[in-house]
Image: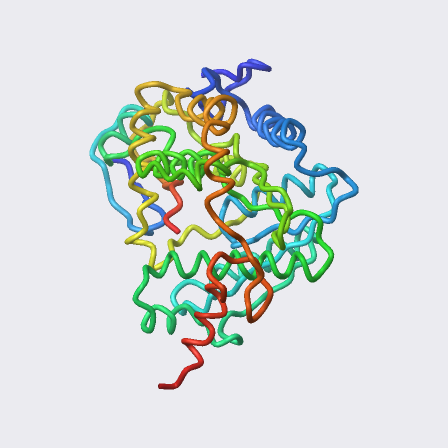
Length: 300
Length: 65
Protein backbone atom coordinates (compact mmCIF):
# COMPACT_ATOMS: atom_id res chain seq x y z
CA UNK A 1 0.00 0.00 0.00
CA UNK A 2 1.45 3.36 -1.05
CA UNK A 3 0.92 6.90 0.14
CA UNK A 4 -1.63 8.59 -2.07
CA UNK A 5 0.26 11.88 -2.08
CA UNK A 6 3.92 10.91 -2.43
CA UNK A 7 3.84 7.20 -3.42
CA UNK A 8 6.26 5.95 -0.75
CA UNK A 9 5.09 3.04 1.48
CA UNK A 10 2.06 4.04 3.56
CA UNK A 11 1.80 3.59 7.33
CA UNK A 12 -1.90 4.45 7.76
CA UNK A 13 -4.77 3.09 5.65
CA UNK A 14 -8.01 5.10 5.72
CA UNK A 15 -10.83 3.30 3.89
CA UNK A 16 -13.29 6.04 4.86
CA UNK A 17 -11.31 8.46 2.72
CA UNK A 18 -10.35 5.83 0.10
CA UNK A 19 -6.72 6.62 0.79
CA UNK A 20 -3.50 5.79 2.63
CA UNK A 21 -0.67 7.99 3.82
CA UNK A 22 2.98 7.91 4.89
CA UNK A 23 3.89 9.53 8.20
CA UNK A 24 4.52 13.05 6.90
CA UNK A 25 1.48 13.10 4.61
CA UNK A 26 -0.79 11.75 7.35
CA UNK A 27 0.28 14.58 9.64
CA UNK A 28 -0.53 17.06 6.87
CA UNK A 29 -3.90 15.34 6.32
CA UNK A 30 -4.78 15.50 10.04
CA UNK A 31 -3.69 19.11 10.33
CA UNK A 32 -5.88 20.08 7.38
CA UNK A 33 -8.91 18.36 8.89
CA UNK A 34 -8.45 20.38 12.08
CA UNK A 35 -7.85 23.62 10.17
CA UNK A 36 -10.96 22.96 8.07
CA UNK A 37 -13.08 22.37 11.19
CA UNK A 38 -11.82 25.57 12.83
CA UNK A 39 -12.38 27.67 9.71
CA UNK A 40 -15.71 26.21 8.55
CA UNK A 41 -17.32 26.70 11.94
CA UNK A 42 -15.53 29.93 12.98
CA UNK A 43 -14.31 28.23 16.15
CA UNK A 44 -11.61 30.71 17.14
CA UNK A 45 -8.81 32.91 15.85
CA UNK A 46 -5.20 33.51 16.82
CA UNK A 47 -6.43 36.33 19.09
CA UNK A 48 -8.46 33.99 21.32
CA UNK A 49 -7.29 32.61 24.65
CA UNK A 50 -8.14 28.92 24.37
CA UNK A 51 -8.55 26.60 27.34
CA UNK A 52 -8.11 22.95 26.33
CA UNK A 53 -9.69 20.24 28.48
CA UNK A 54 -6.82 17.77 28.92
CA UNK A 55 -7.64 14.34 30.32
CA UNK A 56 -4.34 12.71 29.40
CA UNK A 57 -5.96 10.47 26.78
CA UNK A 58 -5.20 10.43 23.08
CA UNK A 59 -7.84 12.88 21.93
CA UNK A 60 -7.09 15.73 24.32
CA UNK A 61 -3.34 15.36 23.81
CA UNK A 62 -3.70 15.18 20.01
CA UNK A 63 -5.85 18.31 20.12
CA UNK A 64 -3.39 20.19 22.33
CA UNK A 65 -0.44 19.15 20.17
CA UNK A 66 -2.18 20.18 16.96
CA UNK A 67 -3.37 23.56 18.24
CA UNK A 68 0.06 24.32 19.69
CA UNK A 69 1.67 23.28 16.40
CA UNK A 70 -0.67 25.60 14.52
CA UNK A 71 0.37 28.48 16.76
CA UNK A 72 -2.79 29.07 18.78
CA UNK A 73 -2.69 30.57 22.27
CA UNK A 74 -3.62 27.58 24.44
CA UNK A 75 -3.49 26.54 28.07
CA UNK A 76 -4.65 23.23 29.52
CA UNK A 77 -6.95 22.29 32.37
CA UNK A 78 -6.80 18.79 33.84
CA UNK A 79 -9.40 17.64 36.34
CA UNK A 80 -8.06 15.06 38.77
CA UNK A 81 -11.20 13.03 39.46
CA UNK A 82 -9.94 11.23 42.55
CA UNK A 83 -10.28 7.68 41.19
CA UNK A 84 -7.38 5.76 42.76
CA UNK A 85 -7.05 3.21 39.93
CA UNK A 86 -6.82 5.73 37.07
CA UNK A 87 -6.57 9.38 38.09
CA UNK A 88 -2.88 9.46 39.10
CA UNK A 89 -1.95 7.76 35.80
CA UNK A 90 -4.05 10.14 33.67
CA UNK A 91 -2.72 13.17 35.51
CA UNK A 92 0.87 12.04 35.03
CA UNK A 93 0.36 11.73 31.25
CA UNK A 94 -1.21 15.20 31.11
CA UNK A 95 1.57 16.77 33.19
CA UNK A 96 4.39 15.07 31.25
CA UNK A 97 2.92 16.05 27.88
CA UNK A 98 2.36 19.68 28.86
CA UNK A 99 5.83 20.00 30.37
CA UNK A 100 7.47 18.70 27.19
CA UNK A 101 5.19 20.74 24.92
CA UNK A 102 5.55 23.93 27.00
CA UNK A 103 1.79 24.24 27.44
CA UNK A 104 0.72 25.84 30.76
CA UNK A 105 -1.37 23.29 32.65
CA UNK A 106 -3.85 23.99 35.44
CA UNK A 107 -5.10 21.17 37.66
CA UNK A 108 -8.28 20.98 39.74
CA UNK A 109 -8.54 18.14 42.24
CA UNK A 110 -12.16 17.19 42.88
CA UNK A 111 -11.12 15.52 46.16
CA UNK A 112 -10.28 18.99 47.53
CA UNK A 113 -13.90 19.96 46.82
CA UNK A 114 -15.19 16.89 48.64
CA UNK A 115 -16.01 15.26 45.31
CA UNK A 116 -13.53 12.43 44.81
CA UNK A 117 -15.39 10.26 42.30
CA UNK A 118 -14.65 7.09 44.24
CA UNK A 119 -16.64 8.60 47.13
CA UNK A 120 -19.32 10.09 44.88
CA UNK A 121 -19.88 6.68 43.29
CA UNK A 122 -20.61 5.14 46.70
CA UNK A 123 -23.00 7.90 47.70
CA UNK A 124 -24.97 8.80 44.58
CA UNK A 125 -27.62 6.59 42.99
CA UNK A 126 -27.40 8.13 39.50
CA UNK A 127 -25.02 6.58 36.94
CA UNK A 128 -21.52 7.71 37.89
CA UNK A 129 -20.63 8.62 34.28
CA UNK A 130 -23.48 11.13 34.27
CA UNK A 131 -22.43 12.69 37.59
CA UNK A 132 -18.76 12.77 36.59
CA UNK A 133 -19.56 14.38 33.21
CA UNK A 134 -21.73 17.01 34.87
CA UNK A 135 -18.96 17.80 37.38
CA UNK A 136 -16.33 18.15 34.67
CA UNK A 137 -18.54 20.39 32.50
CA UNK A 138 -19.20 22.63 35.50
CA UNK A 139 -15.54 22.94 36.47
CA UNK A 140 -14.27 23.49 32.91
CA UNK A 141 -16.89 26.16 32.27
CA UNK A 142 -16.32 27.91 35.60
CA UNK A 143 -12.54 27.94 35.19
CA UNK A 144 -12.79 29.30 31.65
CA UNK A 145 -15.19 32.04 32.71
CA UNK A 146 -13.26 33.09 35.80
CA UNK A 147 -9.86 33.16 34.12
CA UNK A 148 -10.55 35.13 30.98
CA UNK A 149 -10.54 32.36 28.41
CA UNK A 150 -12.65 33.13 25.35
CA UNK A 151 -13.01 29.54 24.15
CA UNK A 152 -13.11 26.10 25.76
CA UNK A 153 -11.87 23.34 23.42
CA UNK A 154 -12.47 19.65 23.96
CA UNK A 155 -11.07 16.60 22.18
CA UNK A 156 -14.37 15.09 21.05
CA UNK A 157 -13.76 13.18 17.84
CA UNK A 158 -16.03 11.97 15.05
CA UNK A 159 -16.83 8.73 16.87
CA UNK A 160 -17.85 10.66 19.99
CA UNK A 161 -20.04 13.00 17.99
CA UNK A 162 -21.72 10.41 15.78
CA UNK A 163 -22.41 8.02 18.66
CA UNK A 164 -23.96 10.87 20.64
CA UNK A 165 -26.02 11.91 17.62
CA UNK A 166 -27.10 8.31 17.07
CA UNK A 167 -28.15 7.98 20.72
CA UNK A 168 -30.06 11.27 20.59
CA UNK A 169 -31.85 10.16 17.43
CA UNK A 170 -32.77 6.81 18.98
CA UNK A 171 -34.39 8.72 21.87
CA UNK A 172 -35.70 11.52 19.60
CA UNK A 173 -34.21 13.87 22.15
CA UNK A 174 -35.28 17.16 20.58
CA UNK A 175 -33.46 19.41 23.03
CA UNK A 176 -30.10 17.76 22.49
CA UNK A 177 -30.65 17.43 18.74
CA UNK A 178 -31.42 21.13 18.49
CA UNK A 179 -28.00 22.23 19.68
CA UNK A 180 -25.61 19.33 19.05
CA UNK A 181 -22.67 20.39 16.95
CA UNK A 182 -18.98 21.25 16.94
CA UNK A 183 -19.61 24.75 18.35
CA UNK A 184 -21.76 25.90 21.26
CA UNK A 185 -21.75 29.67 21.42
CA UNK A 186 -21.23 31.60 24.65
CA UNK A 187 -24.54 32.51 26.24
CA UNK A 188 -26.30 32.78 29.59
CA UNK A 189 -23.19 32.02 31.64
CA UNK A 190 -21.82 29.28 29.39
CA UNK A 191 -18.38 29.68 27.82
CA UNK A 192 -18.03 29.12 24.07
CA UNK A 193 -17.25 25.44 23.51
CA UNK A 194 -15.64 23.96 20.40
CA UNK A 195 -14.64 20.51 19.14
CA UNK A 196 -11.85 20.97 16.57
CA UNK A 197 -11.28 17.19 16.18
CA UNK A 198 -14.81 16.42 15.08
CA UNK A 199 -13.66 15.46 11.57
CA UNK A 200 -11.13 12.90 12.84
CA UNK A 201 -12.08 9.40 13.92
CA UNK A 202 -10.55 7.97 17.07
CA UNK A 203 -8.45 5.71 14.83
CA UNK A 204 -7.07 8.85 13.21
CA UNK A 205 -6.35 10.60 16.52
CA UNK A 206 -4.59 7.45 17.75
CA UNK A 207 -2.47 7.44 14.59
CA UNK A 208 -1.79 11.15 15.02
CA UNK A 209 -0.51 10.55 18.55
CA UNK A 210 1.67 7.66 17.50
CA UNK A 211 3.20 9.45 14.52
CA UNK A 212 3.68 12.74 16.40
CA UNK A 213 5.39 10.89 19.25
CA UNK A 214 2.73 11.73 21.81
CA UNK A 215 2.75 9.41 24.80
CA UNK A 216 -0.85 9.08 25.90
CA UNK A 217 -2.77 7.14 28.54
CA UNK A 218 -4.98 4.36 27.25
CA UNK A 219 -6.07 2.65 30.45
CA UNK A 220 -9.87 2.90 30.62
CA UNK A 221 -11.71 4.47 33.54
CA UNK A 222 -12.62 1.62 35.93
CA UNK A 223 -16.18 2.95 36.17
CA UNK A 224 -16.85 3.21 32.43
CA UNK A 225 -18.10 -0.33 31.82
CA UNK A 226 -21.71 0.78 32.22
CA UNK A 227 -21.45 3.75 29.85
CA UNK A 228 -23.91 3.47 26.97
CA UNK A 229 -22.06 5.39 24.24
CA UNK A 230 -19.65 2.51 23.41
CA UNK A 231 -22.70 0.50 22.32
CA UNK A 232 -23.59 3.14 19.74
CA UNK A 233 -19.94 3.55 18.77
CA UNK A 234 -19.62 -0.14 18.01
CA UNK A 235 -22.82 -0.22 15.96
CA UNK A 236 -21.60 2.72 13.88
CA UNK A 237 -18.15 1.16 13.52
CA UNK A 238 -19.79 -1.97 12.07
CA UNK A 239 -21.74 0.20 9.65
CA UNK A 240 -18.57 2.07 8.70
CA UNK A 241 -16.87 -1.23 7.85
CA UNK A 242 -19.65 -1.96 5.35
CA UNK A 243 -20.08 1.60 4.11
CA UNK A 244 -16.79 3.53 4.49
CA UNK A 245 -17.43 7.24 5.01
CA UNK A 246 -20.89 6.74 6.49
CA UNK A 247 -20.05 8.37 9.85
CA UNK A 248 -18.85 11.70 8.51
CA UNK A 249 -21.74 11.87 6.01
CA UNK A 250 -24.20 11.15 8.84
CA UNK A 251 -22.75 13.99 10.91
CA UNK A 252 -22.20 16.49 8.10
CA UNK A 253 -25.71 15.79 6.82
CA UNK A 254 -27.15 16.41 10.27
CA UNK A 255 -25.34 19.76 10.57
CA UNK A 256 -26.36 20.82 7.07
CA UNK A 257 -29.95 19.59 6.84
CA UNK A 258 -31.10 17.91 10.05
CA UNK A 259 -30.32 20.13 13.03
CA UNK A 260 -32.32 23.14 11.85
CA UNK A 261 -35.49 21.07 11.96
CA UNK A 262 -35.15 20.61 15.72
CA UNK A 263 -34.06 24.13 16.65
CA UNK A 264 -37.45 25.84 17.06
CA UNK A 265 -38.63 23.31 19.62
CA UNK A 266 -35.31 22.94 21.39
CA UNK A 267 -34.89 26.66 21.93
CA UNK A 268 -38.18 27.16 23.74
CA UNK A 269 -38.44 24.09 25.91
CA UNK A 270 -35.85 24.85 28.64
CA UNK A 271 -35.76 27.95 30.83
CA UNK A 272 -32.16 28.65 31.89
CA UNK A 273 -31.64 30.71 35.05
CA UNK A 274 -28.62 31.35 37.32
CA UNK A 275 -28.17 28.75 40.09
CA UNK A 276 -29.55 30.08 43.36
CA UNK A 277 -26.32 29.09 45.15
CA UNK A 278 -23.44 29.70 42.72
CA UNK A 279 -24.90 31.54 39.73
CA UNK A 280 -24.07 28.78 37.23
CA UNK A 281 -26.71 28.50 34.48
CA UNK A 282 -29.24 25.79 35.25
CA UNK A 283 -32.81 24.76 34.58
CA UNK A 284 -33.35 23.46 38.12
CA UNK A 285 -33.13 26.34 40.61
CA UNK A 286 -30.00 25.04 42.29
CA UNK A 287 -27.54 23.51 39.81
CA UNK A 288 -26.52 19.85 39.84
CA UNK A 289 -22.99 20.63 41.00
CA UNK A 290 -24.20 22.53 44.06
CA UNK A 291 -26.72 19.82 44.91
CA UNK A 292 -23.99 17.19 44.61
CA UNK A 293 -21.62 19.24 46.77
CA UNK A 294 -24.32 19.66 49.41
CA UNK A 295 -25.09 15.95 49.38
CA UNK A 296 -21.43 14.95 49.70
CA UNK A 297 -20.82 17.42 52.52
CA UNK A 298 -23.93 16.32 54.40
CA UNK A 299 -22.65 13.96 57.07
CA UNK A 300 -26.12 12.64 57.79
CA UNK B 1 4.72 -18.14 15.39
CA UNK B 2 3.90 -14.49 16.02
CA UNK B 3 4.03 -12.94 19.47
CA UNK B 4 1.34 -10.35 20.14
CA UNK B 5 0.97 -7.89 22.99
CA UNK B 6 -2.60 -6.68 23.34
CA UNK B 7 -3.07 -3.17 24.66
CA UNK B 8 -4.51 -1.71 26.79
CA UNK B 9 -4.90 -5.11 28.51
CA UNK B 10 -1.10 -5.64 28.40
CA UNK B 11 -1.73 -9.32 27.71
CA UNK B 12 0.74 -11.33 25.64
CA UNK B 13 -0.18 -14.30 23.45
CA UNK B 14 1.12 -16.19 20.46
CA UNK B 15 -0.55 -16.84 17.12
CA UNK B 16 0.58 -19.90 15.18
CA UNK B 17 0.20 -18.38 11.77
CA UNK B 18 -1.02 -15.17 10.16
CA UNK B 19 0.27 -14.20 6.73
CA UNK B 20 -0.90 -10.60 6.84
CA UNK B 21 -1.93 -7.93 9.34
CA UNK B 22 -5.56 -8.38 8.27
CA UNK B 23 -5.36 -12.10 9.03
CA UNK B 24 -3.78 -11.43 12.40
CA UNK B 25 -6.49 -8.97 13.36
CA UNK B 26 -9.15 -11.42 12.24
CA UNK B 27 -7.66 -14.14 14.44
CA UNK B 28 -7.69 -11.70 17.35
CA UNK B 29 -11.33 -10.76 16.72
CA UNK B 30 -10.40 -7.23 15.69
CA UNK B 31 -10.83 -5.16 12.55
CA UNK B 32 -8.58 -2.73 10.70
CA UNK B 33 -9.50 0.81 11.66
CA UNK B 34 -10.07 -0.08 15.28
CA UNK B 35 -6.53 -0.94 16.38
CA UNK B 36 -2.99 0.19 15.72
CA UNK B 37 -0.64 -2.61 14.72
CA UNK B 38 2.95 -1.83 15.62
CA UNK B 39 6.17 -3.70 14.76
CA UNK B 40 9.68 -2.49 15.50
CA UNK B 41 8.35 0.92 16.49
CA UNK B 42 6.47 1.48 13.21
CA UNK B 43 2.84 1.24 12.12
CA UNK B 44 1.68 -1.54 9.81
CA UNK B 45 -1.10 -1.25 7.23
CA UNK B 46 -3.54 -4.18 6.90
CA UNK B 47 -2.08 -5.47 3.62
CA UNK B 48 1.45 -5.99 4.96
CA UNK B 49 2.92 -9.46 5.39
CA UNK B 50 3.98 -10.86 8.72
CA UNK B 51 6.73 -13.39 9.20
CA UNK B 52 7.56 -16.15 11.65
CA UNK B 53 9.10 -14.73 14.80
CA UNK B 54 7.53 -11.27 14.51
CA UNK B 55 6.69 -9.41 17.72
CA UNK B 56 3.79 -7.00 17.28
CA UNK B 57 1.68 -4.76 19.47
CA UNK B 58 -2.05 -4.56 18.78
CA UNK B 59 -3.40 -1.44 20.48
CA UNK B 60 -7.15 -0.91 20.52
CA UNK B 61 -8.06 2.71 19.81
CA UNK B 62 -11.61 2.82 21.17
CA UNK B 63 -11.84 5.04 24.22
CA UNK B 64 -13.83 3.53 27.05
CA UNK B 65 -14.22 6.55 29.27
